[in-house]
Image 1 (cartoon, rainbow, N blue to C red):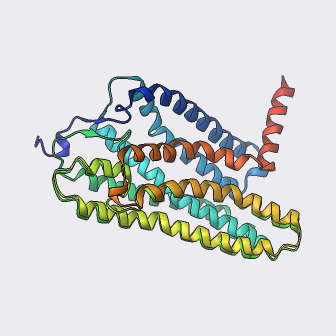
Image 2 (tube, rainbow, N blue to C red; image 1 turned 180 degrees about the vertical axis):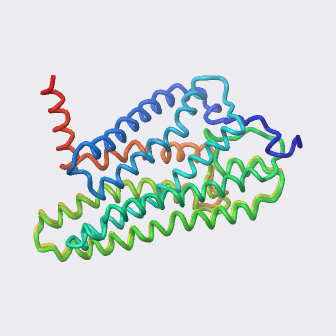
Image 3 (cartoon, helix red, strand yellow; image 1 turned 180 degrees about the horizontal axis):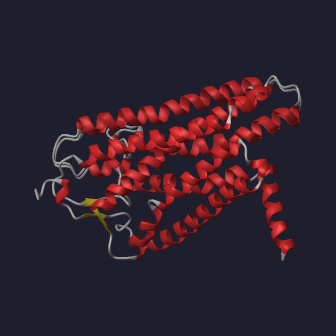
Length: 400
């Protein structure tokens, strides 16, 4: 095999946090706890949505999809990281790296799109309540969810093929804790400007379009809620949207930070690019463009949607109604803020301002903390979910 070709490698070395041995034990314990909480929380959401007929609605259908996504996304990186933190062997096979990149990138892109779909669901529920059941038909819900998965993994397939067609320099040490595009591109021996530009363009589409849709939807929601005369009605409307906005903020925030910055589509990808022996300017620019599209468009849509929601809620005369509306939206906004916030911070900054250590910890937040927080954001304060949990636990206790 050609020593400069990626196929000549039998594997890579994931440096991870090996430069900070004093932190590895602490990180192992903390990440293990977070991972277990992620499994417990998201599994609970999926189970409750299946068990309670009252939760078999479009909102919880999409929430179940989100929980499953988070379970898979975290599992694609955390177990391996835990093994590396406790062992001396930091290697990952070539095929394992390809699979990890494909799965993690596909799940991340799918979540970007799914969060936008969830914003549309909240928009239909708040702004068009009389037509909600007709608009959000089970077939349409299934179609939108399927489309999210298809588009996410179609993009991942394309990006994975492009990345591993790049000629490497024989170096196999990735300064990150899992395989991602930026650090892989750093291993290239050729000019990766074109790759980076393509990645940037794709990121802009996947991140910014959903954000734009979310912003638009919530702008309309706010406008509608403000027209509600009942305070309790406003509160209910905002309550259903709050959880979604929370998740969106968490997810897109980190995503935009990671993907939408010069010479940095996904800092994991950038770290890979640092291994390259040639100019990777084109690759980095492409990644930046893709990140802008994937992160900023969805964020814009989300902001627009919530602008309308706030406007609608302010028109509600009942304080109770306003609190309810904001409550439903608050959780969503929290998640959105976490996701997009970290993403934007990670991707949309000059390469000169980026440090590898910073990127690693941001990635931890993006891949572990957000998936763990999602189920708690959606369940805490949600009377439907908490009521179902009490019902299930009480029935189980009584049966004994």
